[in-house]
Length: 506
Image (cartoon, rainbow, N blue to C red; front, top):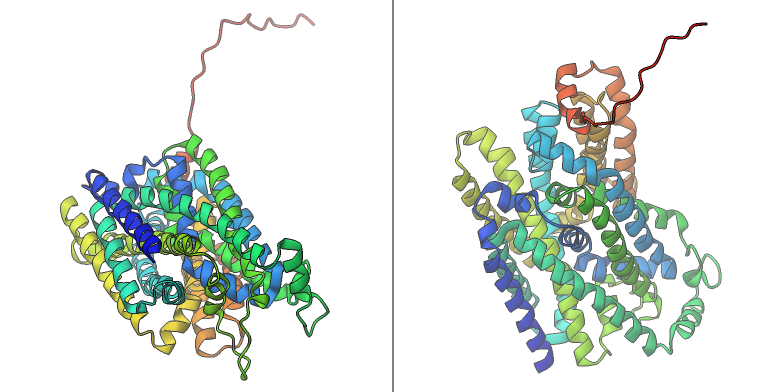
């Protein structure tokens, strides 16, 4: 117990110290929200990765999907690394940085407003972000309850409040730079921790080969050894999870905003490599570990339900105290990094894209920073209240928030970066379809799985935006030309005097 408490004290002290160290970078709006757009590749890549993978992934998703798909759940981690990190950085990174700087845009709703010349789109996007980021924020706490109960025997409520207070302090004081620097340290902890935990858990089952044999012996209705097979017992369901958790990052405000802040072109290239490596180790490791959930000792109840959130803690409960301490710090790191990113995105979006344009157009720089700090605290308080006593519909909303946000934002953001023909009507259509599919499926589950509903919403947006753009009036040419002017630059190159071409005599 002394070892575990000591690790936590050191961890919390470092987080708070960084917050106060970086407060000089949070004196204006650009510094508080984006770190002055001067964040290097390592900090940006780790901020992207740690915002991507929280306790929801390590405890919730790894246990749930590992139990359903067996060792094939590792494909989810591979998809997260390839689609959610590598391709996302290649496709979105450079263009997002260039175009948002040109438009002087600091948030995703602000991008929609300026890219498509529509204040209504900006406000609507800020409302969507507010509604679906808050329950997503609350869900981050859920992965901690069983782990802290197992390790410290302390109330879940105390854990939630303590984590929220510490996160609030360093984000309110230091802004984006505090979150980025803390994300870097938390990311290193996650990289080391997940490797140590996997080795320890597999050793407890006699090594990798013995664990695979034990997993292959688990009975399945599909075929013998399904949980140890290449694609698992349900390849189609697995594919839906890969699409939602990988492609979904392309439309999440808290993820895309990392590209706004990166320093330069070289940083984008370096960050792509670092981010991909981080995702392979952390996401691949989490789902690989979760793949052995069927041999964790957790069994389905009489009604067929499974306590998915208890699977990973049960797998870890037999580890030595020092390893449990590392796991606790690992999960805290994952949770606090995601939480800080979400609340910073929520507060900046509500202040800059809702309050300022509608109610305080002349708000000065210091007022905007103060307003963001107030809303940041407000968002954390709301998320704590929801997390302490989540009603049923909020619990459902947590599950669909990722799909709703990505379903609404992914297509118009992606096409808005590359296509001049995209219209305001197409963006509105994507908003309505993305939110409509996920929310209606929550009320009346005609698709069934909220995971598949989110994946369908994203694919629908990718189809609908170009179709609606083609059948609606073109946007103003001068507006579009101005937006895309940042991607073209005239360069004068000097050369030595060349012999002039002589006219031919023939």
